[in-house]
Amino acid sequence: MQRIYDLEERLIQFGNDTIDVVESLPKTYAGNYLGNQLVRSATSPLLNYGEVQGAESLADFIHKMKICLKELRETYNCLRLIKRRNWINLAKLDSLLKENGELIAIFTTSIKTATKRKFSSPE
Image (cartoon, rainbow, N blue to C red; front, side, top):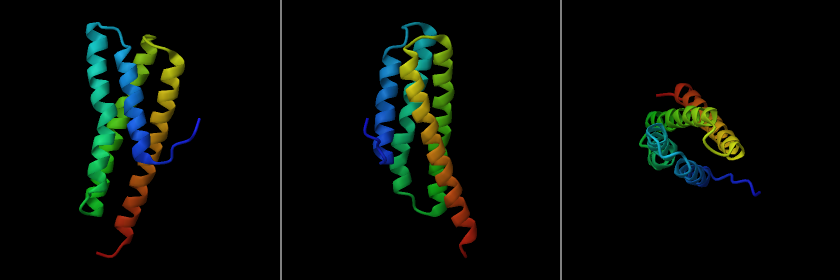
């Protein structure tokens, strides 16, 4: 498997893979509820990343990156609940959880780096 280093491409693939998971959830009240929530939270980082790229200041960049991070964390918890329910193939979920964790780490590091830069630069 070729490793994708382009963050935007990784977010597109993550959203795509998550949609595949959602479409395989049971068509029950709980499955529909979590599926609807998961589609929103898992695709939000990609859509908000476009906003990040157009940030008007370092503070705006940090704020928008934090929104992406918040959505990734919400997605992570939703995927963990789906895993606990044993609704779908665990190998597919484990792979998605791993990628979710890596994306969280990338956004966390970027936010920390930008925050250090913000507070170390003269105003």
